[in-house]
Image 1 (tube, rainbow, N blue to C red):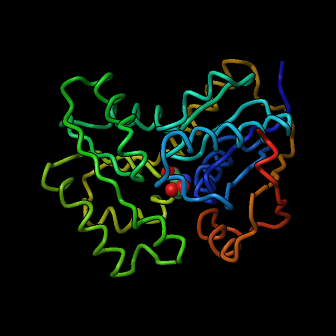
Image 2: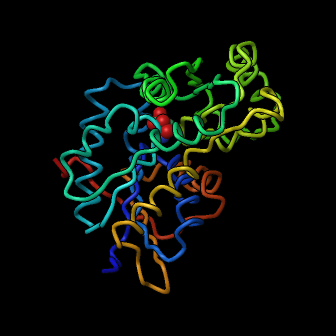
Image 3: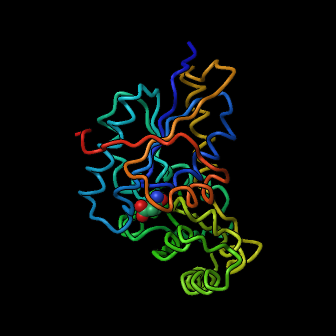
Length: 269
Ligand code: DGL
């Protein structure tokens, strides 16, 4: 039985739009409801308890929109709050699991790097999952807290400041000789040219949006829940209409967003 209900996608803010972009590429017939918690972003510097309680509210909001599936399009939520999936009446996918699988199949020298927010890196979910699949892997992890504000302030991957910050963060990866690097945060694909410049052409960069979108498609197909709609739709909801909304969403999605709805996320407790 096909299921024409939308897929719910949420993020701490607008970074998840990079994941939505990949989902729409891979699942062109599906409709999407996107929630960005712009009023409480960033999650990446918060405690685990706070991230878990925010994720629960975000998921409750999406369920109120009758979604058939939930994607946590946020590296931090996926690393810290994946346990909330057990409480959900619909299937759930985060962005850690499939980026780990993609990295493990890409590496040739078993040296894998992971970059993300401080909460993601401190949580260690990627490292743990990599070692479960590849026990002799060497995993190098670095948190890159300046990358998110650089993207949100409109710095491009070609900017010399971005290149210098990337050099500082990524030097341990280069020195360790990693051949595969997981971009473990939603904003990082926007900076991939700068990251590639430091890491070199031969290092495989794993875009978690792409690996997750392919896995969502596979799971929906297996569950016979792909949509039969010929036209897709998308709805956008945020918890605050921040001043930078229009500019930042365009950087992350690659196009302007119209019709954004405001949500009082604290009502979803
Ligand atoms: N969306 C977050 C992530 O992927 C980055 C922004 C934040 O810190 O909330 O980890």
